[in-house]
Length: 417
Ligand SMILES: *Cc1c(COP(=O)(O)O)cnc(C)c1O
Image (tube, rainbow, N blue to C red; front, side):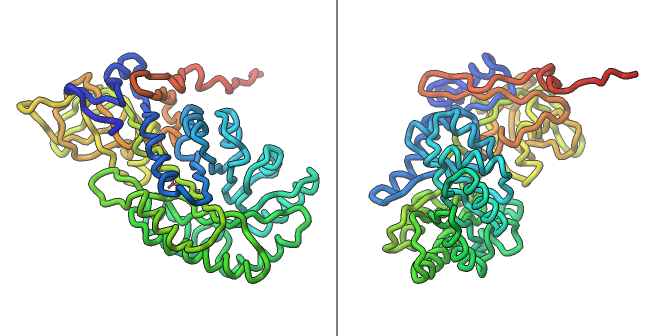
C-alpha cells in the first residue's frame, strides 16, 4: 500500500504526509511513484507474452512527472489534444507510441500529430477522415488511422462518463463502420492501422468491456473478409478503481476477459487506462480552517475546495477522508460535511463523515490521482494547488503552487479614454 499509517501518521511510501503539508503548504496533491508504476505493471504483466501496448490516458493526470514515470517504463500514451501531445513529448514520451483520440481534432492538432509521427489517429467521423487525408496530402505523408467505433454497449456507469451508447457523441456508429473502412482503404494519404473503442469510464464490472471486445472482434473479422487487415485493436480504458467499499473488478479480470474474447487474433492489443493507473496513486492534502457546528449539519471548512477537486460536486463522487494523524481511541468524534471556501453550495468534498477534527489538523482526501488536478480551475481566483511526487524516501515538487498575481498575468486593463 503506497498510502498507509506508520507510527500513527499517514505516509506516502516512506514520507510522512504531514511533513509535506507543512513544507509545501495546503492544499496540495501528493502522488506515489511506486503506486503508479505498480498499477502500470499490473497491466503489462497480465499482457505479457502477447503483442501489446499500454497507452496511459493522459487526461486522467497530465503532470509531466507522472508522464515521465510512465515513459521510462516504456508506456504509450492516449491523448485527446495537441496540448497533451506537447506534454508527452516534453516528458520524454515516444510519439511513435501515441494514440490520438477525441471527436473534435483541429487542423493544427492533426498536423502536429502527423509531424510528430504518432502511432495512430483514432477517427470519429467521416469528415474527420477527409480532413486528415487532406492534411496528410499537404504534408506529403500517409496518415496512420484507426476508427473509434461505437459498439453500442452500455458500460453501466455514471451517464456523464458513459461513451459507448448510440446516443453518445463518441465513435463511429456501428452500422457505418465497415463503409468508412472501405472508404479509408482507397484514400491515397491514409494508412489503416487499427480499430479503437472506449465505452466509458469507471466500469466496476468487466462484462461490458468484454462484450464490447466481442463486438469489435466481429467487426475485425468482417474487415478481414473485405481484405482490410489491421495492425492493432485498441480496447480503450475505463477500468474502475475502488473509491469506497464498492466491488470493483480487478485489472486482471478486465485484461483476461478481453484476451479471451480476442481468442486467436494476432493484432497488437492496445489498452488505454487512465484512472486505473493513477486514481489510487494520489491524495489531496488539506487543512481544517474552521469547525462550524450547526443544527442540521456540522461543517468542517477546509482549505481545499471544488476548484481543486470537482468530482464530488460533478458526479456525487465519494472520496475517503483520512486524518494525517491516527485518531486516539478516546477522542470525541462527530459527523461532519467537509466543505471548501468557494461560494457555491455544491462546494463539498465529502459528506457525513465520522471524524475527530481540531482546527489546524490536516486531512487527506484519498483516491485523488485521477480526474482531480486536471479538472481544477481558478474559480474564486483561487491559485491551483502544488503537486508533489514521492519516490521512496524522497519528495519532489512537480508543480509549484500558483500565485494570485500569476492568475491575472495574461489580463490587461485597456487605456481608458
Ligand atoms: C478517457 C479515455 C480513456 C481513459 O479512461 P479511464 O476511465 O481513465 O481509464 C481511454 N480511452 C479513451 C479514448 C478516453 O477518452
